[in-house]
Length: 298
Figure 1 (cartoon, rainbow, N blue to C red):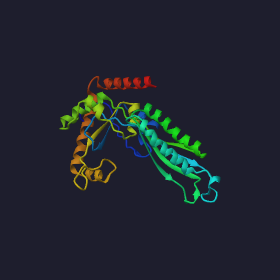
Figure 2 (cartoon, rainbow, N blue to C red):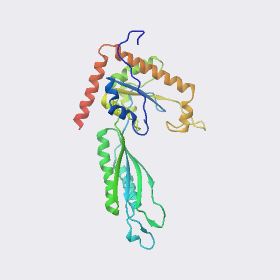
Figure 3 (cartoon, rainbow, N blue to C red):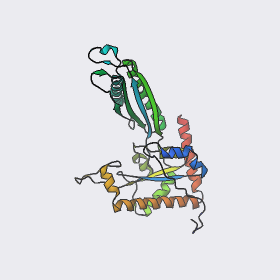
Figure 4 (cartoon, rainbow, N blue to C red):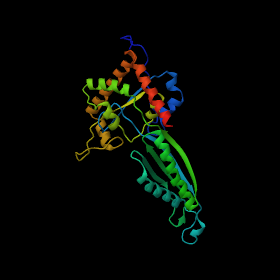
């Protein structure tokens, strides 16, 4: 930038605890982005889906469930106990039934982390970790209320006391179309292939979640997706991120070449933002329009 006298500033943010804790959200709340007067945020993420400039992600809420009951001998005097595990299993089953009436894009996940100590006692404590996802913040909030009733109803049915502890939460990622268009221009110039923008808005969605979603609600953002060919040990289609297949695929020269290609396209997009007259204003105008639409939904 100094060599070619390009105005502006580029800030590189490292992301602590992206997968567990939302490092970008912590940076945002701590004022890191505001301190540097950041106008836009550019990022990329690999996967096994087609290359995309306008990736949307799901909103996400993680939480811990605990039920507290009363111990008793399960054979001699079970009527004296309150079974916390029964409460958790009742809630888990209720959620399984609820899934039939949820919309496409609504996801409920969970696991039992503590199911009791011995089989011959009524369990006084049970716990589980759960996740709710949906396509937007508004849809997530509506789904979470329905899921909460499953846990509350199980407490009423069994007499156990319920404790719900909220954990990490990510907003859905809303890509900025003018930014995506600029990235697409440079990515294709480097030899990449992308679908038309109107198709990407339909096919570029993923039900995974990222803390970049919160950034996209605070400023214009794109999270460019790029495909790395993943091959299973038997030669078939390999798994995506967080699998051994993808770990192997990410080590290849082709994967590194693809990452460099994406990095160049993102850098060129940033240069356009700094140098092309009216481009940043167009980006911000589209961002404001999107925020106004979200406010109307509320």
